[in-house]
Amino acid sequence: MQHSNIKIGNLDATITLPEDYKPKCTPGIILTHGASGDHHMDQLLRIAEAFANAGYVCLRFTCKASALQQRVDAFKRVLEEFEEGGRYPVSKCLLAGILVFT
Image (cartoon, rainbow, N blue to C red; front, side):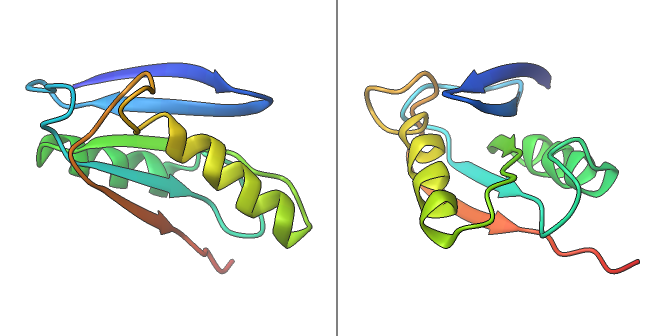
């Protein structure tokens, strides 16, 4: 598995690639944090590694936008990375988030 820090516009992100990543053939998952934290949270790292070990490309990103439309726009920019013309094209994609209570 390989982790790489990337920028998507003004968003900080990390891509985790499985050992057998094949563009357009490997499924992908996009993960983000809840109202607090960032994409470096231990829980997100463990989830990303579990998915990568299961054969998924995992893209985690930090979105600090408070307005709903800004969050939607951020997800759209991140999703473009997995599309055919993006840096990491995948066969299909799942969007997920995490909410942590302290």
